[in-house]
Amino acid sequence: MSAPMVPQQAGPDGRSMGARQPPSCCAKCCLPACAISGYETGDPTDGCCGGKALAALLLQLGCGMGWIISFCCWSPDPQKIRGDATQRTVNNRCFSSWCAGGPCTISFWESGDLCDGLCNGDACCATCLWFLIFVPFIGELPWSAFYACCCWNPDVGNFMRTREMHGAGCYVGQVVKIGNGAV
Image 1 (cartoon, rainbow, N blue to C red):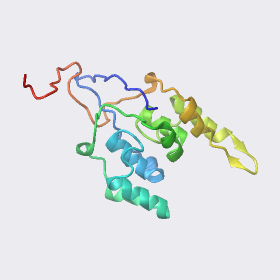
Image 2 (image 1 turned 90 degrees about the horizontal axis):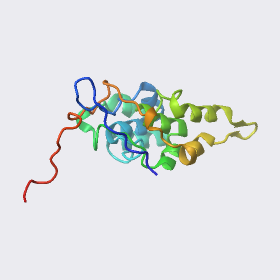
Image 3 (image 1 turned 120 degrees about the horizontal axis):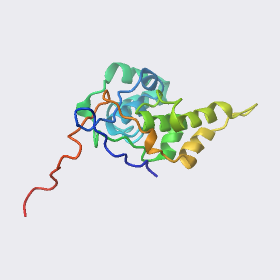
Image 4 (image 1 turned 30 degrees about the vertical axis):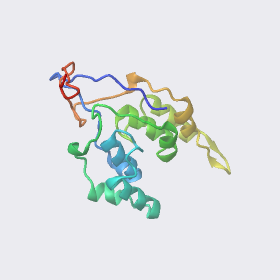
């Protein structure tokens, strides 16, 4: 189940605000493939198997050094944004929460970054589950991933956009031509 589409929001100049946050250093270091995918496709896992995200994923899985790709070989470029740059989504919550973790998945949808929003909104609940549910001699049970996958209901009120996010679009309410105009 994917996250709901959030209505566009106009900035002070009347143009729609973007929803693609350049990844934080923490996201680029800990989850490089998801950080690149989230910026370029608007989903933390949809673009993991292509381009620089694939290189980061393979390097991360092979030797834990995928951050080299995200820091040295890739930079956020608004020209590489695919799809509707005024939206972020999580198309497959279960896959994303198992790959990136429940708190990071929710944080991405709410704040635009996998790590920066861990203590805000619904991501805070998932973060608490991540840290508070620890079973001695067994370790941490993945309750935060279960929460993100099965219990989390995305709240449109927690979806943040700022003027600094990339992907600002046309004027909100502007007529958009669809089709080729032939009658």
